[in-house]
Image (cartoon, rainbow, N blue to C red):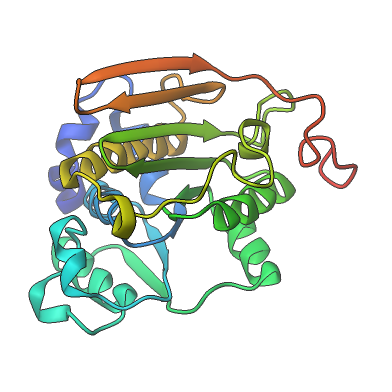
Length: 252
């Protein structure tokens, strides 16, 4: 770590449970961020600022005017451009010492497995169950921990699914193939913009803890936020003995 890095990341280095060892691990890390919307925006910004050495950003969408209410990594000037190029420009302006790799198409199953295997952490910032199930399978297959969050209206939730732990629950343990509910979108139901910032920030915290190998992660715990009442609940999660992902012979 050079003098400029010691100065830039000094507030992390001062933390007793992080210090210079944790910061070096962050600098040496590679993180796969899937989705650059309301969740992916704060995740990408904080991980770039924290010095994650190699960020891989994946999104096949373009920036729209309606995104700017909550997707804070994008700018008015990038409306119409790909979200990956828009986000990359913002991140490089924030921290030009890190590597930002962009993928502006939807990953095939084999591409996803390859990227997950290269990553130290997967951050799920998608907005639909089908994508989350695919990410969960990739996480289990490659034993790469996944930090997953979701938010709609005034409610949010987040957990860590750590496939390195044999008895840890996965996303499929929590939801069945139908997602447990009718798929809803922000376009249909709305979402409070700072709630996405809150959930994305927690995702960034959990990611940095995993990278620095410090603290107690949310593995086996689900945090549920009701922003309208400002109530936060925690639910303990256990591996489902009938989960087809956890008990697939290929993943065991």
